[in-house]
Each structure stands twice: as C-alpha cells, then as structure tokens.
Length: 285
Image (cartoon, rainbow, N blue to C red; front, top):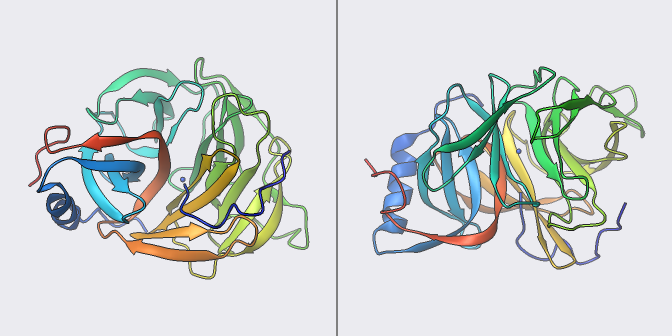
C-alpha cells in the first residue's frame, strides 16, 4: 500500500439521521446559486428521496439537484475511476449506473450475495483492482464486480489495534489515489460510534486501525470521499448538512460550510467539474 503524501491535508479534497430531506431549504440554496446562469459543480452528494445534490466544494454551496428515477431507495453512490460512470446501490440490493444530469439509469445488476448494511454503509471503488467495496455498520465487507454483480465476501470488519474487541460501526468509506490506472491505494473508513477516521488494512481482511478523532459528533449517516490530484489526496466529509475537510494523517476535521437541506447519505467527487444550469436540472419549486 502507498504512503500518504505529507501535504495531503493542506487543501480541499473529497469524499459515503433518518429525517426527510428539507426540500424547501435545498431549493432555496439551489435557486439562489443558479439564478444568474451556469455554475460549476465538482462534488455530488446523495440526499434522501433519491436526490443527487450538485455541490461546488470550494465555494461550499449547493448548485442544484436531480432526482434519480430508480425503484427503491439509493443507499450510496460513487464514480468508477475506470470509466468515469456514476454507480449507485439501492435497498433492493441492485446496482445501477446513473446519468447524474438526467437522473436516468443506464444499466442494472443484482448482487450475488445480499448486502444488509442499509444506510449505515460505505460505498467506494478500489481504483487498482477496479472493484467496488461495500462496508457496513453490520460489519459486512464485500468486494463486488459491478459488471456481473458477483460478490466476494471478505473478512468481517474488526479492530486490530488498541480498540480490539470494540465493535466497529462503519458508515462511510473512501480509497486514496482514486484515478484510472492507479497502482497503489489505501482504504479509509468513518466509524460513527467512535467518531473517528480508521484505516482498513488490508481491505480484504477487514482489519481496522484507528487514525484519530474527527473532533465532532459524526451523524449516524453521512458521506466521505477522497479527491486525488496528482499525488495529493484530500479528504471530505459530510454529516447532517455540514461539509468538512478531514486530515487523513490525524483524522481531525475542519468545517467548510453548512449546506442545509441534509441529511446526506453519500458523497463522491466527479471525475471532472461540470457546468450545470437550470436547463440541466429538474425545475426548482
């Protein structure tokens, strides 16, 4: 596995409550930001009601949203480095490829083994193996071929450091070096019960090593992703409606913005920033 760059935590980077999404708040935020034309978005969050929330991470604001037309409830989303497509999984245990601008699904694939993590789960692509990692607060640890739906059930999540014997509650996961052609990567998770960043090493064994406290009470559900720019990996968290940077060396989180309209269930940086306008998104109420 690679060693993280020493300056990984010096800039904005990426990023996987059950109350209903506050649609009026999201609409108000999106309406004000879209009012005067095309806006840039580089971060996608999954809200309740199967809404994809377009975010400008640097500005710390919502740009707009699009509802995904899919049966069931989406639990997690991530862009696949190998092809740049967006994937999502529902509570019906079906994987979908999704066009984020239209909300339409392009293909679907059932998992060969049921995943029961629900909203308390991590969803992220390993850029080296080109396999989807599913982790759950129920300690499930899956490796998935998204082209076939075939699942390899890996080692149960468990602490192998001084937290050994403590039951983990993993609710979000993200890999470093999230680029096509990556030759090394590391898998980080968020334990919402301990409010800390952990390293899963090796990922297939499920062994967890504590990195450090986030410094705040992470919600039961939330999102986490890691943005890779060259050799730099930068972490982002979303909990409730709050967007944070996270230092991957220490676990310490820094508040970036309150986006309102949460809670959000998952987080994924786009392969490239996109320009969106009111014409790209569903009409705002």
